[in-house]
Length: 337
Image (cartoon, rainbow, N blue to C red; front, side):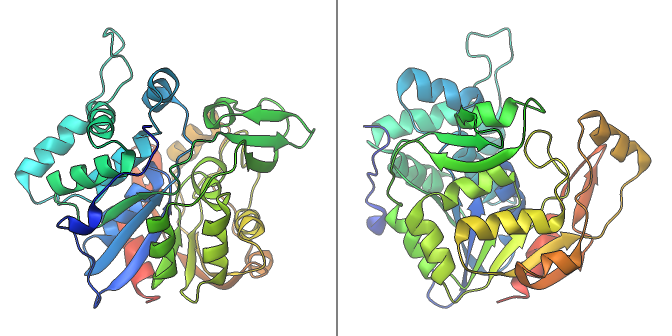
């Protein structure tokens, strides 16, 4: 019941302009949020297509115990697309991001996930909940689940072992060999609105975000990967800044691009965005402790998978952590449309 689409969106207030460029960001929560925060400052129509196969943390508890669809990535994209200059909306967002601590019976849950869960019940489906939250938060764009059907993300490792659920893939660390292939444990249909957004897009941005647990899961929904493969709009990939233990150990820029092209099928990326910035020894040491390292740029190999490689300092350093610079990323994406 909770997974079903139920919304009278056509009667709601948010309408996309026929005159502005339409940009679709495809991924998960944290990475897509970075891109959305930069792009929303431009005069474009934004759509975030969000993976629906998360199974960890608060999302996993709500999914396993109560049957709700994954809500955490949706919440992050909703917050990212809300107007930052509105004090009331900002205060509301701060409340949504609040997470109960380990001493509470609600430990691990964010307020936003619980509110979305309640609205999913009230509006008899997750899309209705998203649309109502979008109205309340005065959203500058739309958030679209990639599917309304329930399935778990699974991985076949290089030794043939199968790992089931996104959280098991994400949290296994360096145990065992690398990932050979991803698949879903059930057939799913694409959200028609997500499919329409991709079909009508003037540009499609894949990432940033975890390759195997945030971006590629969307491509496992066959009509979505078909639409990306067949679009005439530029397909842009924001390559990761760092590798990730147990998933992308030792991956270069071309390896990331190769994996995306493998799941899209028979189409090169139009633009591959690769970082040229360097990091301090303190930052590198912190990531080395996590057995992670900067993604190496191998332009010659990467050209096999992308028509154009855009080299730029894409990184923003926050203490000893790095993420993509929202403004730089948005500026590059806007230059392609």
